[in-house]
Length: 302
Ligand code: MLT
Image (cartoon, protein in one colour):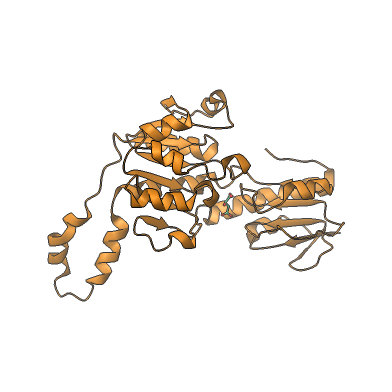
């Protein structure tokens, strides 16, 4: 009999794959495997019984991998399993940053008691004119599964898409049937593009990737999207760049106290992977990896 500890919400559809040889616990320390989503494990000591930690999600910055690997624990994630859900929200992010829908919706609420709302709407709507994505240049930083899918959709929306990836070779991105029109280095992306979207993991080399120096290179009024990790953007530098007009708006899936009250920031409460389908896919993949390791000693990871 194996014991599996869940540290936060794991989709029941995934947990169903644990058969009668498994006990699921939320609190017992002496588990064979740990399943988690966003729980931050940073200071957590593991019982020697733990053999595998599986994250139902792509990013692993909530797990001290080095420390646990040294203790002989296998750590795996589920890359790609939620890529579709994130891609769809990024597309919404692009639209939210180009059209003034959020401001418009807020305004409509303020006039909800007016007797002739429709007349007022027709009178005031020009305040909320936005811009079209067609013909604009999009820089995609990170050409993994999500970056590639976002690129292809942006191309079909009529955008000119430029790609850059600090880790993946252009060939492997193209191998994923990416239609990115041109590949630039990061500085060129900053100078050329009107919209920039981040799709790299948060690691030492990518921390504060968007900073003062990079904003200084950009055109005036770029629109920045971050559905990858908050730490990729230096928030102090971003605030300054918003105040001096270099950044027109920031759409982020990682709200931070520093930016909550800024008009030009659209804060989404980390919903990128929050669809029923993606939660199920990630949980099923994490559970299969856990079972395969505990029962057969196989390690499956990207
Ligand atoms: C990811 O790293 O894949 C997402 O942040 C997952 C999540 O929202 O749980």
